[in-house]
Image (cartoon, rainbow, N blue to C red; front, side, top):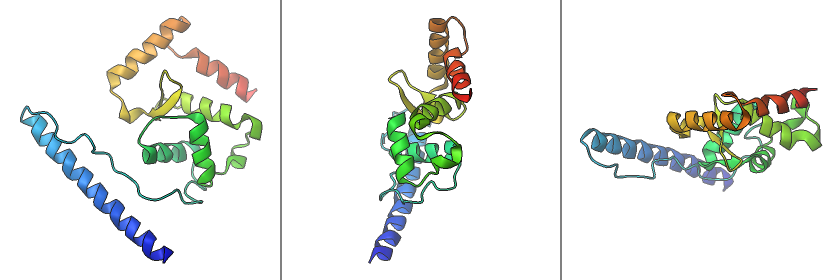
Length: 163
């Protein structure tokens, strides 16, 4: 019975992906025609719970990115860590002590600004979700608060973490 349910969920995921792609095409055509998008819900919804081996053997950035893609929203580091643990991510393989894992995860996500974006509310989202101008403004704002254009607070935390 579980195999049939799993097969149907996989089929449903494909259908949802096709529907999302069709909605995106309709929105793109309407935009090209000077009209407002018709569909706001163009994200693909994954059906079903995390598999217990979903993230096993994957690099941290890939696993965290996949988790965020499934959630379709920015999440706090604690929630990302719980999701990775549920999906079988091997935190022992990172060499991080158990008491430091949450802090190290947050530092790693913050430093990987090519894939992730830390929002002002201390959640993390995928960089691809946000407008480049908004990201640039946020970095400049943090730089002004810290006295430079770069994000030295992240580097300082990383240096402490690696010491």
